[in-house]
Structures are given as structure tokens and as C-alpha cells.
Length: 591
Image 1 (tube, rainbow, N blue to C red):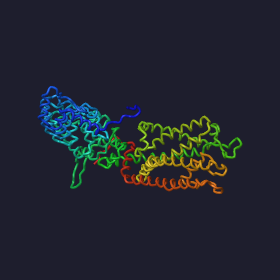
Image 2 (cartoon, rainbow, N blue to C red):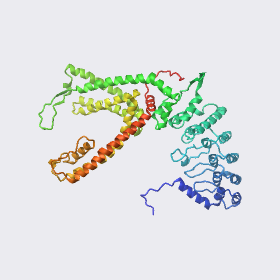
Image 3 (cartoon, one colour):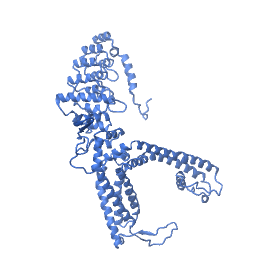
């Protein structure tokens, strides 16, 4: 019985393979092709009742099976009797589009590949587009064309054979990737570099330049894709191919590097931008390679550091003016009498007409004008950063500024709210004022990135807040609510005047939170008899909260500190690469 509310399990490749083998055993033609039973295969093909085009579970023909098992004799027989099998692709979603030539190339069987090509196998437009060939963690990505398959397996003879018979090195797959893009993704990096050179040299001899300048659907060239994926071997290989020797003297050599795709100048999607904003940690290793390392250092020394330090000084002066304006905000004595003994308010906000009377008020007004103008300038400068926040992960990318972008965008919004409250004589300006002061001064930590000793500490704070602290907080909430409820239940039947901090549920939660942070000792009245269960629950809470969880948080933060300290130089260069000051119109070449 099929239950509609139960999802149907996805069939795995192993399960499909089992069904495939069962189907092969049931179909004589497929079985003979797999087992290389040449005589039986010839007899079956002569029989009119046998369809030579019949397929198996995944849409494979007898020729596919013969090629898969390196049965050259069976391949020749099948091609001779049914030449239409040569370019017949598989039809299943898993292996859709795969031809016999794809399989021969993957098996690195040069003899079978030559036989298929001699019988007009398609080397130009045949594409394997099944789900098995898509870039996913559970599958391999060799592209879709036969030539890319040959290059990815690293067989130079097959690559030459396909190129000689018309394979197109400029062909793109469904992702816009050429064979050069695909080679940057292969795990065997040295072999990929050799295949890269082989294909580029052949194309250059026959068609000239242009193959390495092709973009994929993401606007990436092979060099940029190698940088984005953190393929240091391929990236360094490509960069060194383009460098020019200027002079040499003994062991010393001087090279001129091409920075066309590397520098941010005139390229909105340069290698520097991709490395700094990339999701892969390996991509930051590109910053340790020449000429990127020298480029980042030179740009930081010449443009970034003066610009960054000047901006930091201006911002600190601005925040001092903001703080003085807020500290000296217009207040007057409270006009009405105090009737509530818990109300200790003595001063209230002045009206707009009363706020600007004396010379001191006008001095404060000048500071407030600077505050508002500065807030609008910040808002206009940071609006472009809104378009970079495409996902929540942006807030955890410490190299790019992380939550500092959100902080500095919130600050001018709070200034606008405060301005509206002041102009409309509305009470409550202390709320946005206190928030903007906290956010404004917290943003000063952003400028610690300009100092090599302090920069990694801002990253530690980011990682601890969005990593260790978030994981710890949800555990803390569970423990606090669990034990707070237990404490409230224990004292629920007792005299509320003698319970200390557990007389109602909300106070019980707050008191448990204070206990968790060791702010207070046990807030109970020991002058009276306490329920026996309280001692057991309180002892358990002390062990879990004080001994276990707080030490767990310390250990987690210590581990984060160690990991960041290990990569401090790499992170520093990434931070420098992420900060761009105004640049000159001419960047000298690196030597």
C-alpha cells in the first residue's frame, strides 16, 4: 500500500546499478556485449527478432556495454552490423547524452576510441548532460564534451586524437565552462596543467590567441576560476606563463607580470575581489603567491593605509562630536510631582523652542548639524554595500567587514529617527540616542583592521560571536528555562514574601540567568526551611552551568583564537585586499 504522505526515497546509483545488472542478465544481446561473447553476438545480430538498438535500465545500448568493458572485438561487430549505435546516447536522467566515445575516453582505451572515430563518432557536439556529470559533491565534473573528458583523465594521446579530428576547444557546456575552466577544477593539478598547456598550444598554432580569454556564465576566465577555487598550482602556473623576464644577474632574476585580470583597476570582478569575497578558505592562499602578494602589499602601502588611517582619524573626531552633542542634550527639571516611590526621574527633555536659546545651545547645535550631515554622508557612501548583502552568510564574512556593514548602515537610520523625534517634540529620544552611540563607537573596531597587530582580533571577535557564542546561547537558553521552571515549581506553594527572587515566573527566569553568569549567589531565604528538592536541583544547576557550560565556552573560544592565530598573516593580507582606497590612474608593473 502506497501512503501519499510518505516521501518516495531517491534511488541511489548503487541501486540503479543492481537493477542494471539484472536487466543485462535478462537481455541476451546486452549480456553478450558485456561478456565479449563475439560468436553469440554475431548470431544474435543476424536474428531478425533481436533489436540491435534495445537498451538497458539507464538507456545503455550493447555498444555502450562493450566499450565499458573494453571489448574491442564486440565493438567492431556491433559497429559493423549497426553503425547507428556509434552516436546513440544514453537516455536516462543519470547518464543522459553519454555516447560510446565518452565511455572509451573515460576508460582511456585508445584503440576503441580510434575505432569509433573511424566510424564517424561525433567528437564535436556530443554532450553528456546527465545528473551524474553535473558539478555536485556526490559526482564528478568532467564537463560535457568528449574533449573535456579526455583532458580531465589526463590522456595526452586521446586529446591529440580528438583535436586532430575536429574537437572544438572553445566549446562550452551548460554552465558556460570551456575545457580550460574545467581543468582548473580537477584534483590532479599537475596533470591538469599539462593538459592545459597542450590544448592552448594546439589552439594557438591553429587559430591564434583567444582561448584563455573566454568567460563562463559567471563571468570568469580560467585564471579567475582557479583563484576563486583556491587552485594555487594552476593559478601560479597560469601567471608564470604570462610573465616576462626583464633581466638576470647570477641567482637574481627580475620578471614583469601581467596584472590584467588580477588587479582591481578597471576590472569589477578581479582576482583580488574574488579571493577576498570567496566562500572557500583555500582561495586566500592565492594571496601568498606572486605577484598577488606584492600587489596587495604595494597597494596597501601606497593607497590603502594612508586612506584608511585618515578615514579612521576623521571618524573618531566625528564620534567625539556626536558624543559631546548627546551628553549635553537639552534637559530641564521635571515639572510634575513624583507620586511613585520607584520613579527616580528628575530631568525631562526640553521642547524644540527651549532647546536652542543660550550660546551653549548654539554650540551644541553646531555639533548636532555635523552629526546629521555626517550620518547622511555615511548613508550615501554605504548604500552600494547593500547590494553585496545577498545572503545571511555575508554577516559572518569577517574579511569583508562582516557585521560592521550592518552596524554602519543602522547608525544613520537611528540619527534620522532621533532627528524626527527632536523636531516633533516627541519623548523617547534616549532610546535611539543610546543605540546610535553604542553602534557608532563599536564601529571604531572596524578601523583596527588597519593595524597588523589588531586586525586579526576583530576577526576573532566575529568568529566568536557568530560561531561559538551563537551555539552556546541556544544551549544556555534551554538550561535557563528548564531550571527556572523547576525553581518556580519548587517554590510555587511557599509564602511569596519569603521566596527571595523566585516569587513569580519572570523573576525566576531572570534570577536563574544571573545565577548562570555567577552574578549572584543562590537568591533564596535561608532563614526559613527550604524544600529539600531545591538543594538537589540547585546542585545540579551549579555543576552544569558553572563547571561544564562556562568552561565549554572558554574552550571553544580558545580553539577559535588558536585557529585565527594560525592564519593571522593570511587574514591580514585578505583584509588589506578587501580595503581599497583611492588609486592613481597608473599602477606600475610589479617586478
